[in-house]
Amino acid sequence: MEMRLYDTLTRETVPLFAADGKRLRMYACGPTVYGPAHIGNFRTFSLLDVLRRTTEVAGLNPLYVRNITDVDDKTIKGSAKDGSTLGEFTKKWTEKFHADCASLNLIVPDVEPRATEHIPEQVAIVEKLLANGNAYVGGDGSVYYRVASFCEYGKLSHFHPEELQTQDTNSAGKANAADEYERDQVADFALWKAQKDEDGAVHWPGPRHPETNLPIEGRPGWHLECSAMSIKYLGESFDLHAGGEDLCFPHHENEIAQSEAATGKPFSRHWMHCVHLLAEGKKMSKSLGNFYTLADLVAQGYDARAVKYLLISSSYRSQLNFTLANLKGAESALKKLDKGIEALLAKAGLSRADFDSPVFDRASADDALKTSFGPALEALFDDMNTAAALGAMWNVLRDEASGNKAALAALKTVLYALGIQPIPSKEDDAGADEAPEEVKALAQKRWEAKQAKDWAAADTLRKQVTELGWTILDRKDGWDLKKA
RNA sequence: GGCGCGGUCGCCAAGUGGUAAGGCCGAGGUCUGCAAAAUCUCUAUCGGCGGUUCGAUUCCGCCCCGCGCCUCCA
Image (cartoon, rainbow, N blue to C red; front, side):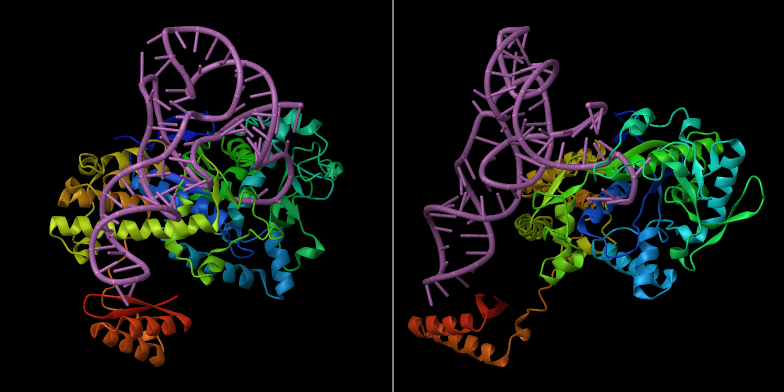
């Protein structure tokens, strides 16, 4: 079954396919590593992970490249403030990012290129653009892209360059024309930024100045790296380019302009953008107190798996409002999912270990579509509708008919596509050992009182345990303790 | 001002030209001394007003409200 996806460029939902018939070449804009990524960033990365996984299930054999932006104003400022080198600073935050990705069960991209490791590739593009007349050296010595030289500028975001020019303030209330004297037109953007004092040790020999033929010392502009790295690993034309909706303009628009002007070929064929997350109904900001990182949430006792579930629980094309109440809801849902899986396994005469082991394969898309979980997969293939997929999964999760090996293999496929890890059963570690001896003694005494049917004493003891911050959970043959 | 998205049960969220999936929460029942768990049942006519239609939540128009982007931003 073919997979379809909305394309920002044409504003139509069209089939996804690998132009070379072999691998779906996809590029995603990764994080700028200047601090901890927040859950809004991770909504996009989680969704892109679902895309990567779903295309795999659909047989498109994805080649997934996601970059790390490790040089820009923020990383330079951050490292200066830290008193560390740019490399040390970005390494720290890259590692943190990777750890977060791992807790969210995101598949590591096939290639994860860094901007600073691809300076020559970037310089080469700038020199080509200078030679082609698409770029010029501005008043401040930086190299700018001449937007007017690219007649298709605006085709992705559907903006008209003239309108950008006539507008005198942006959403932040700042004058867009502030440093216009350095550029021919306001819409022109920096390809290569000439070295400045505040850049410190961060500079490289850049493109050769058209007049002096000497390299311009400096650093790459923001948009350039993605063009250079996507082209390097995926070719001058590739299948799919994705990112957060805010990147549509100017980032992606600029990538198209510089890449197509430099290569003379169409850049990415298909563009996909993930709509942003709101937190508590508003855009996340530290001053509003609705700014969350994964670490914040985990520190508050929430499960990263629940965060992941919540982040993908609405369609990538609609806004998601993140609230702590909904996160709790996601935890409940996941608990129910685990129990539902256990029940189906029991019906099929399989154990949890069977399900978790690699021996129990996922079903192929074709086979999965024939089972009761087929609709869940179909929803993913239809413009990656994660919300509908989850709904379809819930619809059949408790059906007797889903308790067979073929259906369970299909369920495993669906969970794989969504990147939801089924939790292995942990019957063996009963959690009672963490309680203090004092609490355990009380719980034991209560159990004995209960056996003696001395309800008054049992209730008093339960109360004491509760006051110590623990809850007694009875089993048929004993008790467990849970932190209240 | 330009471009775009959305308003569906308390919360989150699918969806369709023929009378609205699912998750969470809540309520009630069953079951266990109590507690928890489990399990069952229950809860919407789709922002407003017009239009098209045999029939609209779904198509069109207008209005109201919210949100995003317009060169820091996943």
